[in-house]
Image (tube, rainbow, N blue to C red; front, side, top):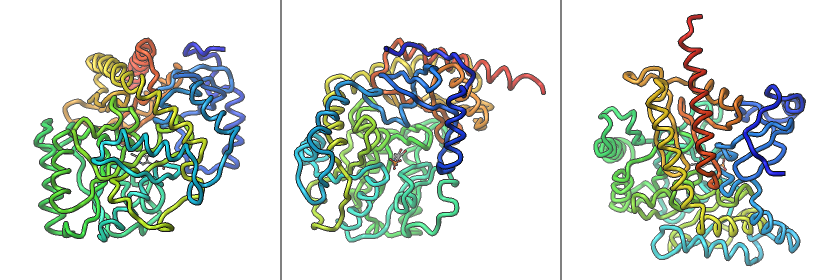
Length: 449
Ligand code: PLP
């Protein structure tokens, strides 16, 4: 049965979802960040049905993962066909074609000069861990630089880079030593005003004239790790000139540039990798989320001469398992033939719709993003840019109640990260529901209590 909608027919959560959530609370880790009570039964393209029969338009995509939509028939076919041959053999000890083929495909599309070699893990954080270890190994240097607001994962090495929300770090220290953080060029909030050139210069100057002068010698820095578009941090786009100058600065000091495209990569930005907008060639790219349409896969793909570590230095039993590789090969085919272009086209269309909505709503301070990676920042006051975290949560909940799945990002932004199969008609529906949710929240906020 085809899922049309959205269509909400029970109170939310419905009776079945309520019962499931009670069971979950008894036995599942409470550390997960469930913003609203969605319990999925099935999905199809950009639509999701919950276990009570409510139908939602999905602009969250399992945190920007279901790139080809839910259960794309070609991806399911590729997984099924591989499952009938073998499920596991461990690429750590043996060879299988899907893993080699995927590495070849990545080498062909990654903006890394001379092609790349790939290391396979199961998640974004493992992709980052691999980049960290390889950076240290290849340079013989220990220190690392990342950016405030950045999110790179939650295992102990990645967590040391992560500087998004303090609750993600609280109680887990001490973390990896030798990690320094610099401000990220968030032009909307930059103290030097809404000017990409100045904003880029301000952040780079901090690295060059503060960190390198007072805290760490550049010849002891192994890598700078950067998201070209901060994901968890609020869908903040770094200006292209920032990325270009960061590349110049790293090259000058023999520092590796690690491009974290776990969220922005694999077509989401409207290009295969978001760093391509700036024309910058990094030394390594961390990839995960969208690469295998929902199956677990994390990849560190790096310059061939850098990925020259010896047998045994890094490996993973499950990393790059055959099912995930088969799903990724098919995902990449769909991305190249249609979906990267669709992300650019429908993404621009949706962003324009959201910009038009912003004209009507005082709660919206900023609309930004590339492709189908669009952030809307909510503020209490457009002049002071006072953040509106509670209103943000209320808009996400009001959207859910109307059948639109969204996620928050950063302190007070909302992210639109739908499957890359989203159509213009679905973008219209998303914009309409979002508009209604804003009207509801604004009306409540202006009603005296
Ligand atoms: N890097 C970025 C940019 C991410 O957005 C994330 C996850 O949100 C990660 C790394 C960590 O990925 P995972 O949750 O798969 O470990």
